[in-house]
Length: 421
Image 1 (spheres, rainbow, N blue to C red):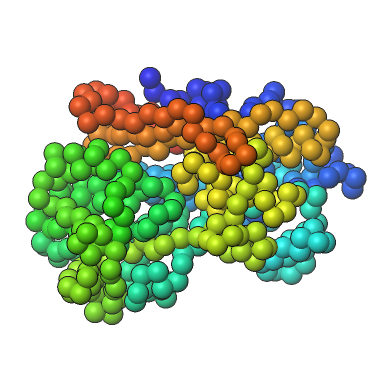
Image 2: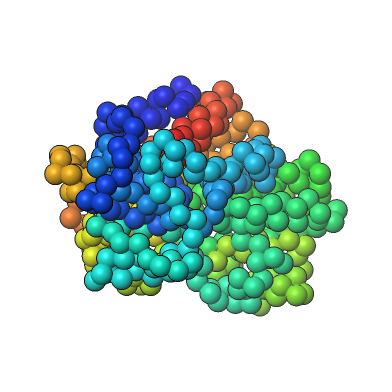
C-alpha cells in the first residue's frame, strides 16, 4: 500500500497530539526554546514544540539557509527522477502559521552556563531548552589528498544543495567510456544505503548517455546496507559497469590527487574522470564547540534525546550517538518528535509519553525498482534499541518493487509537510 501524507502523519512512531489552535501573542514570561538547524530534526522539533505547546513556549529556529534542500532524494535528482527545485523548501509557514521566530544566521557558540547561543551576525539568544540538529561535518584528511578546498574538483555531494548539481554536471560531461569513481565513507555515516543508491543512479544515467562508461567504488567497509539487494540490482540492470573494491583489496587504503584527477587504491594509480569523495563524518561543529561530543558524536539519552553532558540540551539526527538507529532523515524526524514531547512536558508541566521511534530507508536501483529497510525502536538505559525490523527480498516481483518506489514518493511528500507545515 502506498504511504501517503495522511498515513505517514497518522502513523509516525513518535508521539503526536491534537493539533493546537494558532499561536497566542508572544509574552515575556514564556519559556524559550532555541533550535539550531532547520533540517529533518530541527524543523520538525521547532514545529512540534510550537504546535503542541499551543503558544506557551517561545520557539526560535536558527538556520543559515533560506531554502533547505533535502539530502534525501538528492540521489534521485542525480539519476533524473527528481527536479532539483523540488528538493528545496522554505520556512515561511513555520513563521506565519506557528509563530516560530526563524533566524537565518549561523550559530557559532553555546554558553551552557548562561544558557545562550551566540550568532555569527552578532548578539545572542537565551534559552531554557536548546535543541541541536546540525547534521554532519567531514573529518579533514580522512581521505588523504582531499579537503573541503577540493570539493569543486572532487565533490562530496553529501549535504543538500549545489554539490548535487555539480556532481550531476560532471557525470553528464564525462568522455565516452570514461570512469566515475566513488570513495565510500567508513562507518558510521549519514544514510547507510546512500552511497550505493548514488552508484545506482549514476549507472542509470550513464546507461542512457554513456553506456561504455565504468564505475569504480573504493570502499573501506567489509559490507554495506542492502548489499545483496544492490548487487543483485547492479547485475540485472548494469552488468559489467560497476566494480567495487573492498578492504581486502585495498579499498580502505586510498588517496586522491584532485589536480591530476587520480585515485590511488593500495598503491595502484587510477586515472578517473569524476571522483565523488564521501569522507568520514562526525557531528556538526556546534555540537563539538558546545562540549557535547565524546569523540566524533554527541551521546544522548534514548528517553528524550537529551545530551548526556547537559540535560538542558537535546541533540538530534545525524549528530547524535543514540544507539541502534541509523543516521537518516526519517530517524531525525522521529527523534525530533520524542524530544519535542519531552520539552513541552518539562516546560508546561504536562504529560510526557514513552519514547517510541521508527525508521525506513528507501533506495532506488533503477526505474521503479525500489527497495527498503527499516525498523522500530524503543528506549533503554544503554541507548535506542531495535524491537523489530524488515528488508526487501531479492526475489520480489516487479510490481512489489514499483510499489516500494511509489511508497517512497509518498513518504517524501509526507515528511516535508511534517517538517515545514
